[in-house]
Length: 174
Image (cartoon, rainbow, N blue to C red; front, side, top):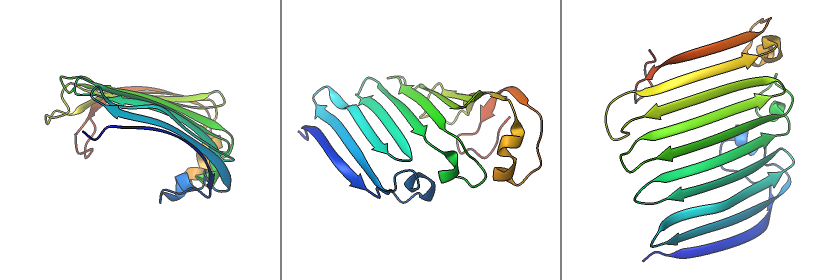
């Protein structure tokens, strides 16, 4: 049947997944806690916790034949660990779901101090060829804080509200 019920806690040392920017967050000692279940009702991840000097991650997920959903919170102690020219703490809060009709909804919010970026892609039927609908909202108090990370001279603040469509292969945005 493939059923399992895992409840694990452990320590990590230089945890890595092969993505440099993420691996920089988990260097040194850390902890890992995982609860995962697979049974006749589906697959559930009631708890995934990763703690390290560079970041804390909390995630949950549920996958069934009817629907799927997941939530994630990633708190980064210092953005300089993942991109030269950035500094300060940031938090990503994301959630996603897929219905039995294959409709997908995602919401991701990144905050750094008073700065916020929210992205909400959705798709009525992920199995089709239709593009994703995307909404983007950003409020950045001082774009100069991000200038050196992108090699540009920037100043002032930014408020942005945009909506459009992204091709399923991400090659175009309207």
